[in-house]
Length: 323
Length: 190
Image (cartoon, rainbow over all chains, first blue to last red; front, side):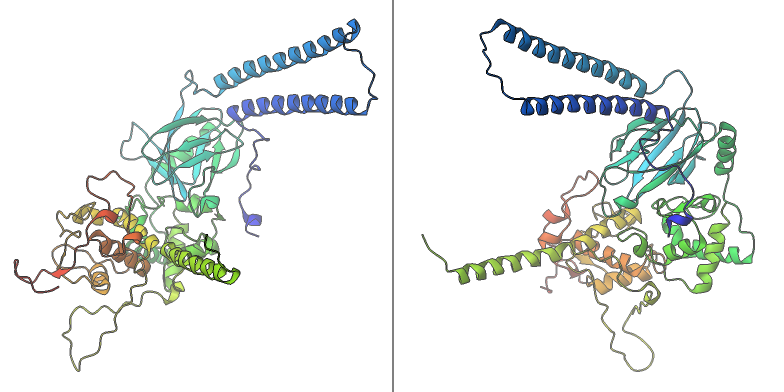
């Protein structure tokens, strides 16, 4: 039922590549699966033929028999060598295709893994101290390599967007690097691929690939401060946010809220999902999540929030308005 | 060789299993303590002085005593909420009083510590009422007591996420609480 309202995104599958890296991996995988299927078929076929054929009263000393055996063994060894060398060649080619591209100017994004959500920072030398910090939604331009600098806050996580690229681990106290590139615009789902605790299964993200122009527009908006509350209800909601427990963990740019424990909520209203892509970002889902997160994600580090109904509604109005 | 009868070996097995089962309690993780709407009922008594006849203060129950998961959750909060900023990463104190020693200005009882966190204390300790949930504060209480070794050894925190220059909590000696109101040197309380 939740999935019915979920934002439309490409089915999460490595068999449906939409990126340069995933394409190369997909080609290699195809070669691998076809070759091994053919080899397995031949081996079993020969085995069954050998089992079914009536046993001849063979004379191993006969010159014709020996020659036939040599031919068979020679052909098998040759075929094996050809396959291995081809694999080796393709493997090297794949390795080169997956290496970080140096010619084109890439976009750089820092990825930080948390239990159980993803933090994305877009460093910008022009405006230091005003980086875009967002959560569980990675916006990237189509057709431009994006270099991801990754680390983890608590335990080992692994970044995996099957439609775009292979996995790469995020390790606490150690930076790793990988890159992705999307060939076509779309929303691609990714998830943590290394068991990282209770809510590992609900640690997903969306990669939103847009044409360069749209991406620049998004980045411009995302770099800005949060929108001021539109009406009195939203203003009351802002007060709930700032004076209650929310601001202890969450930050909203342009307000006093500066917590760094949970996701940055500066442009929360524009996000498609909540709770690390577990639920679509609707008013009902958000209300349920704020009041009792442990029901959606037991063990999550967000505590339950006992809010009066009018406080909750005001808070929801405020958060929805943070476009 | 001693031969056990079927019955007695079954008994031994049951006894061993029940001993093992008690070990499971150590790591019990409770995520939904109370229905959220019923939370926030903290009646903290600051002092015995009050108008009218004396009321017997209901002792605030500590739900996480000797719970390893709560203690380590408390440790996470201790860093995240920047308790470490004043009380030191290992509880050694700096701007705030140390928490790893045997001195307790406002009492070492779990309910005393709970009150100190909820209501704040003079000279810098902020009040966390409404900022953290009761469960989180109880987790902090569990960890604060862990800093001076007041828990059973097997539930104490044995490994931190950061490199630390001091011994982990599990290997610290138990600091039997004493009140700091006594002049230094006087040995009265056990």
